[in-house]
Image (tube, rainbow, N blue to C red; front, top):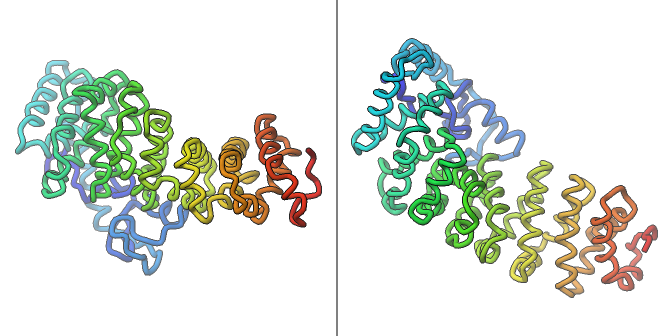
Length: 405
């Protein structure tokens, strides 16, 4: 076995890292124990991440044979120092090895092996990654992603594996801000366009890697590359959120939304893709502080558009879900949640909203916010909402007598 060639079955499908403690679930799939425990017991999923089958039980059976294979592979790789670019290796040796990898990446028949070698080198030693930044390796790996037609990889298992590996390699390479920006903006943002298409791919791994790369890319590219995004990006984001997928993927697409929504017609495209409804449902299930804050922030931006408010109100649980997070998550969540309700009340004069707000306890929470230790800005927003329908609410026996105007 080539020491730098990491067998794919050593990699956890959730963390995308070599498994430390492989365990098998009832569907027969194997994951790293820490990752699958987080999937099942932290995020309360009841299905297998890969097969989507309902798990008959939550027993995790240690895969001792696979663990021995991984341990043996690790020991074997440590002894094969010739595959590692060490700090003590002469510069000429480093140059020869990297040049050889560059040649292999350019050859279709050796691309898979060369990509795995690159990944292994980066994971072995951070100095290796630094050396590679000064070569053509990042741009060559990116070109494999840009030059692959999404329909082509859907029809070819080999193409899917190569594109998946190329995205993994580009992600672990962690190019500097300058290099990543250049790669992403070359050829009129072709890398962004390619990844936006792949985020809808049927392979779970491809979608996750595309999302993680796009998150990093949108943090560094110029605003113009966030403006003319295709609808398929938002459709892919919606699908990932619908799947209640891996924590990393969910956070990545939420970060993408927050980065790109202020530009162009991106909010409209997100609404048309069904993002609002999915965010409401995810918000109802989540208790994690930062995730709730991001989702409320996304809803705030989307409700800044009439289409977003309409989509928000079309979900039967939207008002109740947002109201439920006020005074339960954080001061940031309070401000975001109140802002969502304010925009809905300010622009939508529906009597149904007025009635629902008081029935779900939203009005009571707004009254409490006015008196609680919250920011002046949040208090003013809460007072504004209460002022819209104070006469109507005052007649209800549900209305808190403690309200101070």
